[in-house]
Amino acid sequence: MIEVVDLTKRYGKVLAVDHLSFRADPGRVTGFLGPNGAGKTTTLRALVGLLHPTSGSATVLGRRYVDLDEPGQRVGAILEVNAFHPGRSGRNHLRTLARAGGIDERRVDEVLEEVDLTAAARRRVKGYSLGMKQRLALAGALLGHPEILVLDEPANGLDPQGIRWLRDLLRRLADQGRTVLVSSHVLAEMAQLADDVVIIAKGRSVAQSSIEAVLVGVGRGTRVRSPERDRLLAALGREGIETAPYEQDALIVKAEAPRVGELAAREGVVLHELVAESGTLEDVFLELTEGESSPS
Amino acid sequence: MRLLAAELLKLRTTRVTYVLIGVAVLMSGLAAAAIVGSGSLGDDGWLELAQGAGFSTTLATIVGILLVTNEYRHGTITTTFLAEPRRVRVLVAKLAAALLAGVALAFASIVTTALVALPWAAARGDALPLDGHALEAVGRMLLGFALSAALGAAVGAIIQNQVGSIIVVFVWFLIVESIVGVLAALVFGDLGEPDPVSPYLPGSALGGIIGGEGSEFMLRGGPAALLALGYVAALAVLAAFSMTRRDP
Ligand SMILES: Nc1ncnc2c1ncn2[C@@H]1O[C@H](COP(=O)(O)OP(=O)(O)O)[C@@H](O)[C@H]1O
Ligand SMILES: [Mg+2]
Image 1 (cartoon, rainbow over the protein chains, first blue to last red):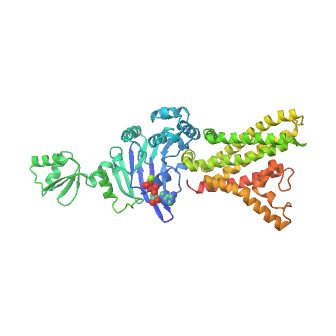
Image 2: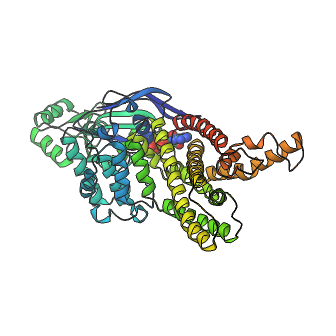
């Protein structure tokens, strides 16, 4: 489990993280979302002891990272896109990590296989593509069979297949009971990946819940207006369709517009408006972080 | 221990380590050839040869600097601190690795010097016995190289920027200490005369371990090594502060 409590980090005048609190639970993929400059990297670095918070705390498995026994075997993290010596081979990079973390070197070839880098393992990192570097970083994070994964923008530089592969991998890891915290500024990456989301802007939390609740809560789905709102609500409820109140006589319904229209016709409910919200995740994101994000 | 093993593996898996060893071999080989070839080998030929090879201690300092600053430059300090978040331990491992790297460079220089000087001196009929002087020269080389490398690592950990560290060290050794020497001479006596300050500067102390004999501007052997060790220790304490306080 990961717990961030009232975390604040100030760089001179810049308040990078502002009294942020959230948690990430085992067995779930928690998406950590926010526009560029929102404070995601700062938060994750504080979590793994790479920076000293101004105030508040960030703990892993109930302890500060520096106080963990064998952190290298319990927590796997990616904090930098390209943290490799360019002249060292991918395999040798992992060997240095294994040696420092007290991890059996046989794991090196295993994780190289897991991230599909075996063929390039003995080549210098200098010649790797961004996607290969991301996979090498991921291999480093997986080296110690960690219970906790902290990944800062791991999908950067991956092609669509790579993103799907990453999604499947993280899902598998979460299903094994591990805690997966993964940041992104691209919401689409998270839509089918995260179970829970924490959305921040300007260092502050703007939303935390399951991803469905966030989507419904801000109006993705179908917007429907009816003078017989309560009858419509009851009918939707019988069908097990999620809803959220919108205006006095309107609802946001998490279902496709045709389905809502047909249901209303069957029940004889008068509709005044039926709008398919084309809202993409980006719209949701903009809506939530409106006025919070600075141009960057 | 495993941190030290990791540091040594980092050294072994970057090309620059081998390049610097190669340069040390080349420099000490040339120095040995020049010294023996000039035919002026004196009573303590081994000391002269050690002094010739001693110029390579600058390479040891560079290895030490790179050992630390490469990690900041390429961002691998992040993964290093993830594996061992107690940063002072990382520093200690790096200082130990630097000492060993210095020993390796010294070893390469010693072997090269011996391989060039022994047969050549024998061919010329010059005396170059494997006696106590030889042993002493080896000891000076090992100490001088190891402490030079450790000093580089400590400075690298304080400054963290690679180019900055190299510039600071060499500007200090080559320019600052000379200026201090000149000023001290003006204050305490005459230019060109030994003064009471310059032998105690860090560069002179390091240089004195191998090259102090016969110079009135430097401490010699043991005292020089002790003083240099003191400087390295003091810089290591500063490095511990810098590494733990400044987040990467
Ligand atoms: N080392 C630093 N010094 C000064 N400001 C920083 C530093 N690191 C981050 N910041 C600032 O803190 C804010 C949050 O940055 P960051 O955590 O990198 O955001 P994100 O990862 O969400 O893009 C930004 O305004 C950034 O400019
Ligand atoms: Mg970031």
